[in-house]
Image (cartoon, rainbow, N blue to C red; front, side, top):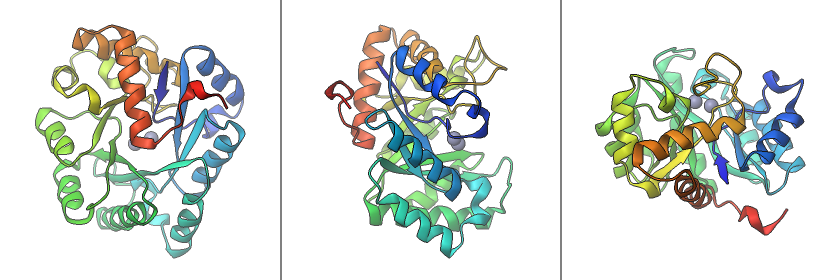
Length: 261
Ligand SMILES: [Zn+2]
Ligand SMILES: [Zn+2]
């Protein structure tokens, strides 16, 4: 039993077969999913999926760094109202992306700081997107993230970057890149980091694990990343599944999937 802690199944790439994709995930050992928003509209559609699949699908509300320019006062108020809905378990995804800079860096910083404050206000964890922005992310969390914790989603950094995140009380979530060859620094982090601070995710429809790389990703493939994590740590798949599922429940305060619903 696994939790896919980051899956954009609300996106248009799943419009033709969304329910079938979810059914395949549930039939293949994915007990629960967290569906993050990237703007207000996609946060709303994530919530709609959570409402349609109570106990199985949970949503996060947030504005992605790519879309940071859209986070005006109205959008922030909409996020604040959405965050109160049952089924919303986090503020996300939020963060910094200085690789693509689809919103200007200073706009990304403002949106992150604003949404960290929203997380504090709503007592929800955050889902952080962090690309080519590590030093600035850590500095911003130190300055503006007091009382907030959460997940570094799709963690692809080295051991020092992992240590920075862990020291701030954050969890690390591994996605498909853990299965890619030649990613030795990441493999070292996965083998070394404390097991009680690790999560797995797909980031569907992106970052498809081996051997399906190049195709659309979907939640059931989270097992491939969990399998790789187990290999790297010398553990059984079942041990990694249990640990990461327990961790996901702790971060997002998910109900026990065996309790029904
Ligand atoms: Zn992301
Ligand atoms: Zn994402």
